[in-house]
Image (cartoon, rainbow, N blue to C red):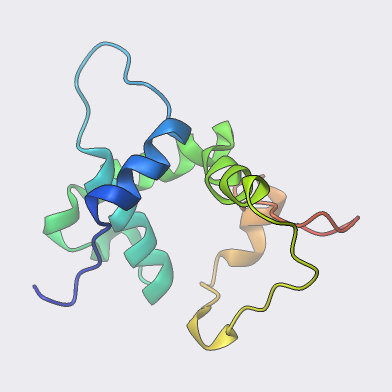
Length: 122
């Protein structure tokens, strides 16, 4: 499938330090799973609708839940940006943001990354 999203090797090397280490049994490739998570969230799809190229949908879902609880996504978003210059304003084009029907409950469960310095945000 040509419409699948993939990080470059350089991009993946920049993200790898923020991913938890594997303990024991080798796990499904982090790059595949991470891209599956991004693809599903970006397109507002259910976990079971994940393209097979990204791995088993249960693996993608479980990794998303585990990494969310561990704060992996917070680190991926916050730490690299903290190394750069401090921006006064950050603009996001909302045409690429889709709210899944379960999005409202993610914040209450602590599964949505808080990337804002604003009090009460996230």
